[in-house]
Length: 114
Image (cartoon, rainbow, N blue to C red; front, side, top):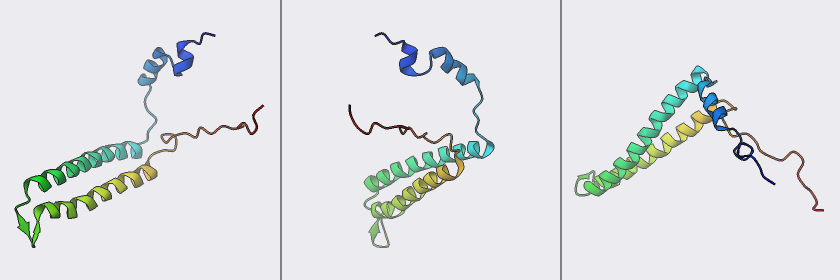
């Protein structure tokens, strides 16, 4: 039995292109959160890279009897966790339910094989 390509992938190429022309239905709050989330994601990556660079390059410098590499870990890891948790909490608060993954549970599961 031959199945058409559009049945396998869901939407055809033309339908996907026409969907790009439609405006997204995000409200102002969601759009503002998406911008802030992008900024937080970039800062999180910069913190991660700076932890590694500082830990590798500045081991010889000591502040309060701890090397700067240790200070980068003491400050960087909690900042990374804080920003990650802010992103998660912001997603839960500001993103619409329609943007979240839709439930795909089977309404009538097979209870017994025939």
